[in-house]
Length: 382
Image (cartoon, rainbow, N blue to C red):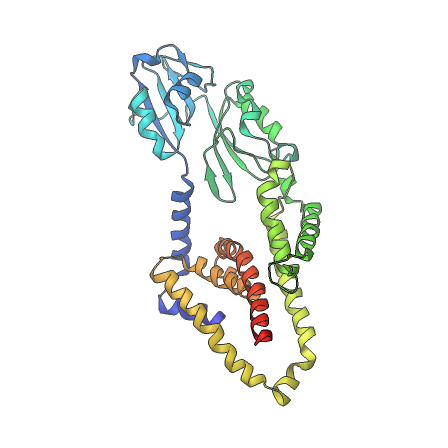
């Protein structure tokens, strides 16, 4: 399997660093990272109405981080009034820029309200207080912080627009704009203590493992199947991790753990897995080659392994133009091979292979178990 991945890399002349760059660009487009721009209010309908009313009229989500009125720059709240001739610094997704500019008046590229002499500060705050985990932005009631606006939320290297319904998670980075004292108040609420994130969340790790073991041991019955199937210790924790990652913040469960602890658990898990396989197969291994059909099984295993993986890899690259790291994770997932995942992950520091692996693995695990049972039934009745 490793040979197939290396062969695909050679066949398509893949540059691993360039693949990382392409993936980052694709993620930015996919996740629609917010942009900023300036508009001048020339629409007479805006005279003397609040930003909250403007948002309701336009029907587009945007953040106004700064307003210049009569030469004075301030950080507005939702209840701040807007007047003709004001300059607004807007943060929104790119697809909403045209609507915002058209309603407010016109874009003003000649000004930048975020210059160094601006009295409004722009700071980044880390969410380190466990009480903030799972809290929606609208529940913060930013209007009570004297003009603080959250303009971006960065999580695991991906930047989001701060929708009111977005739930904060431990480890998030908030890009905030506002007066110095007001930002300090928000930072105190969020925690903003980097050292707090250096402590591994041992309770979450072992609770997740226990939940995964329970899921893996749960019997699943299918019609016309003589026996039930189980996801086992490989599939159970993966399903548990996906469920906790999605539903955890909604129930205020802290699932954050440090990157170093994550890497350590990965390496330990793969080492223990391979060691257990080696200990179980060590005694009959040489005997199967010397006195059994070991070479025959290896000869059958080569085409069974190489042909499907090579076919999928070539189609994914030529027809669907997939990123090479995603292809490597896809091949590891469809073969449910954790050791291959370790090799695929070593090709990039971005964790690209892990994403495609976790997407494919649950279905591949189900199909592998079911297909084995179906094959057994067909051969048994024959």
